[in-house]
Image (cartoon, rainbow, N blue to C red; front, side, top):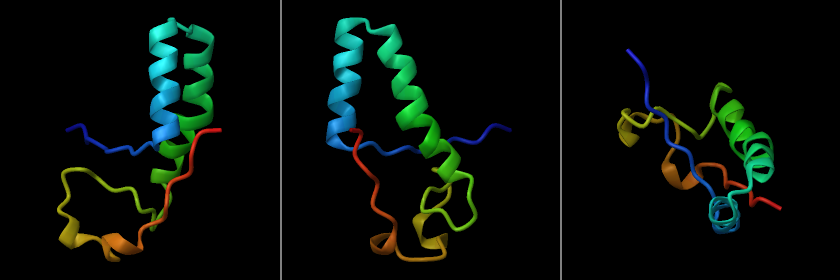
Length: 75
């Protein structure tokens, strides 16, 4: 059975994604995947990461949600 994972992006990243889609920027899309999305996916694989299986209730996390790591902005 496949798992579903949630991924958060900041406002700057969302705006960059919007620009990529509006411009049809294939090269920018690949760069965005390499620089923004893929690192976040790899971070989610680390033990103790604040990323978690989206189907898992928040109550079962090892630490409170307010203590989760803050996500960076795309620059």
